[in-house]
Length: 362
Ligand SMILES: Cc1cc2nc3c(=O)[nH]c(=O)nc-3n(C[C@H](O)[C@H](O)[C@H](O)COP(=O)(O)OP(=O)(O)OC[C@H]3O[C@@H](n4cnc5c(N)ncnc54)[C@H](O)[C@@H]3O)c2cc1C
Image 1 (cartoon, rainbow, N blue to C red):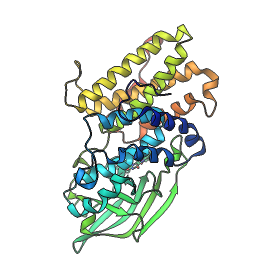
Image 2 (image 1 turned 90 degrees about the horizontal axis):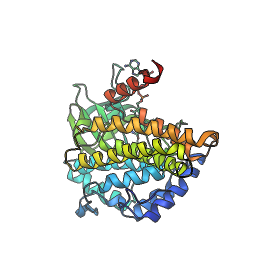
Image 3 (image 1 turned 90 degrees about the vertical axis):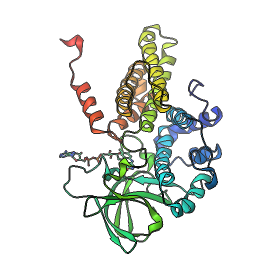
Image 4 (image 1 turned 30 degrees about the horizontal axis):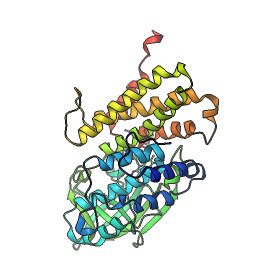
C-alpha cells in the first residue's frame, strides 16, 4: 500500500483505491477505466492546461509527484495517463490556436481522451531505410499514409497525435480524431506486462489532415520541438515509481526479517537520492554533487527499478513467483523500462551493466 512518503500530489484515498484495482487490472487485462475516472475527478486531467481552456496551473513537481505515486500504485494507470499527457503537452505547446480551442476544453474536463503514436518518429523502426508514415502537402493540409506501430489505448482514444515524414525529410505532427476516414485499427498486443494498456497499431490510408489539426512542423526532427519526447524526465519518474513500490515491499519484508534489512535500507537510500535528484532537476536546482541530465536520471531509474524488483522477488521467494503476487507483477513491469521510450545511450549503458563481470566472480 502506498505510504505518504512522496504523496502530496493527490488524495491518499484515491491512491489506495487505484492500488486496490491494480492486480485485477493486470490479471484480467482490463483498461483502467475506473482509475482514470478517479484521476479526472481528482482534477488531474486539468493540470498544466491553460486556465482559459478549462485547465488549472500546477506547482513545480506536482505532476511528477502524481506520476511517482500512481506508478507505485498501478503502472497501467500511470502509463496510460502519461501517453494521454504526452499528447496534451504537444497540443498545449502548439502555436495553432484553432487546434487548442477545439481540443483542450474536452481534454481538460476528461470528456475527451487522447494518445500518441509517435515512436516511428524517434525510437521505433529507425534502422529501416524508409519512413513508417509518409506525409505530403495537399492544399493547405497534408495527406498521411503508412503504419503507426505503437499506440497505447488505440481504441479508447478520441484523438491520436501522430506524424509523418515529407519527401524533403521534414516531419509534421498532427492530431487526428478517431472517427477520421482512412484510419484502420490493428489488433492490440499480448505483452509481458501492461497488456491492459490496450497498446496496438494503426494504418493510415490517405488520411487527410486539415490545417487546424497541425500540432507542429513541418520541421526536421519534429519530436525534438515542444518538450517531452524520448527518455523525458516523466519516463524516469514512472520507472522510479515502480522502484518505490518494490523498495517499500522489500522494507515491509525486512521489518520481520533482519537478514534483509541492510540491503533494503541501501535500496531505500538510493531511491530517496534518485527522487530528490529528479525533483531538483525538474526545478532547475543542481543535484547534490551530481550532474543530472534527463539521460543520466533515466539510466539510474532503469537500473534501480530492475535491481529493486529482483531484490523484492528474491525476498518474496517462490510465493512471489506465483502469478498475481505483487513481486511477480513488479518484476514483469520493471522490464518495460528497457524498451519504452528508451534512448539508445541508456539502452547501451544497460547492456554494459548486464555484460559486466561482477567483482565476486573474478
Ligand atoms: C507496452 C508498450 C507501449 C508503448 N506505447 C507507445 C505509445 O503509446 N506511443 C508510442 O509512440 N510508442 C509506444 N511504445 C513504443 C516504444 O516507446 C518504443 O518505440 C518501442 O518499444 C521500440 O521498439 P520497436 O520494436 O518498435 O523497435 P525497432 O527499432 O523497430 O526494432 C524492431 C526490431 O528490429 C530489429 N532491429 C532494431 N534495430 C536494428 C538495427 N539497428 N539493425 C537491424 N535490426 C534492428 C530488432 O530485431 C528489433 O526487435 C510502446 C512500447 C511498449 C512496449
